[in-house]
Image (cartoon, rainbow, N blue to C red):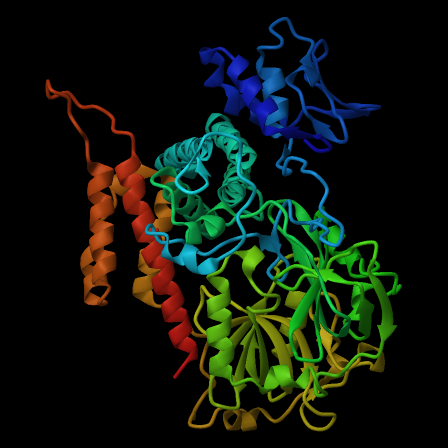
Amino acid sequence: MTALPAVTAPVLAEALDALPARLRRKVDDAVARAGGWPVTGTADGVTVRVDESTTVTLVAVDGVVRSAADARCSCLLAPNCLHRMAVLALAPVDDAVPAEPPPAAGHPADPAADHPVDPAAGVPAEVAAVPCAGAAAAAAGGAAAPMAAGAASDGGFTDRQRVAAEGLWRVAVEVLAAGVVGCGVVLRTALLRAVHEARANGLHRAAAAGTRVAAGLRAARGAEPHYRLAELTDDLRELLAVSRRLRGAAPPAGELGALLGVARRAYDPQAGLRLYGLCTVPVVTDSGYAGVVTYLADRTGRLWTVADLAPGDVGRAVGAGDAAVAVGESGLSHRQLTRAGLVVSGGTASESGQLGAGRAVRAVRAAGAGWADEPLAGLWAQPLPDQVRRAFGAVTLPVPDRPAGADLLFLTVRVLGGHEHTVLVGTADGAVLTLTAADEHAVLPYRDNLRLLARAVGAELRLVGRLDPTRRATVQALSVGPTSVDGPGLDLPESWAGHADLGYDRLHSSQLRAGDPGSVDAASPGRAGPVPGPRVGDPAGGLLRRQVERVVSGGRAVQALADPVAQRLRLARLDLGAQLLTTMGDAARARPRDAFGRLTDDDGQAFAESWLALAVYEGAASRALAEASWLP
């Protein structure tokens, strides 16, 4: 079913509450059937035809169903019927941040901040795992969001916020215990209700994680192609970690702002900026947002971004590259700006470096700079170890707090070979890296371009890529350019200004200047023999990750029956991981008894605590192993 308007979480929850208990057990089956019901648009919403005598009508205000009374069914059981609930459950969920007073003059809010998106990665705003003690959250910093009304306690953290965090924690515990296989409409609706309450009380970071978990569960149950178990696992870890930290004693003031998050980022006035285009990247998120982000550098080499993100799919990302840049009235599109420059006056920007689009901003087109010219050349002059440490440090920060381009790497490489759409390259200091596609959508030319580059053995390139913290020595390639006009490399059209954005520009075989395959070993001093294959993750670390993801997929019951692998982890010197895995297995199998010896159900919190500890450990261990694969 398509073309349904969005539905707010309270409307979905109210419709579910109206169902009798006997019908709640049939909701998932009803939703599956509803996928084939035809939808007809009306002047103020849509009509869904169930059968010859039954229709469901949704009335939308500004494209959103905001009241349960606006969802009506013509059957005799209405409004407490499965037809109405099934249609509402199929509709997308409106998770917009509640409206706030307009920002003060000179401090415009970020128009895309209602749904923070990592503009480079093209994924929903993700934050690294927060240890149960909350130490990483303290390091992340960030401004506190406005407090909800209620009795304040413990230095500004309110009782209502604590109650909202408790509700979010308990639903997340149920989700973990049930796993993807057990999370139907009822549990997802409970999660969305808790998310809505958390957002209304200023728990923006936890609410964002909960929204991503709900979207991931829906994608999993619907077998949608963009579903990724790894991403759902990371989102659930984030949700449990943040809600757990907020449900107990109030965090210290230094940690509170990072744990609460912000609904809208503040934009501060900037002095005159002279900016040079660097590269343009299409963005497609699993949360339903798409668009484009262009990276720019100023005279000092600091990176800035200008983004165009809105609800849409990969088609919007393709078209957004040719959309006008929303900074002043330069008349440049994003694909033009990546090869030009801007002079900006009266501009605003977030602390992380995202440029604002306030009415007072003035911007005019200026000359760009080649990658071999200053100030852009300085980006490639940074030593590789320094770049890697900076990028790994950036990925541990919440995305809204991550400096623009901090997770990017600027490399000079020689192509060693490749397989399908994976390219093996070497650096001058002997490092062997794997280049992968930044986005797997077939409409975007990433994979075709990498498949072509793999044939250019010996070609020397400058590369802008994004660090992949989950794989060893792996870079998501974003943009490439030749190092010189002679020798193996690329012959690009003059209009491309010396580089190709792999998400928009489509390379052709005639543009390749391949070198002698026999000279490949010269690109990797100290290496001899055949070109090595792509590096793979640590086997023990992969085993640990599978244990974490298996629980998310199958729930607590799967872990209770799992084969013990702790000994294999100890042999790999992951002693703490083995201990945490044993503790989780014991918690999964624990069956408490009452005073009469009868089996009772626990609340699942001990199991959730043990899984969270293992998931946080695994995330930290994986990042440490990945970083070690880069550095001597």
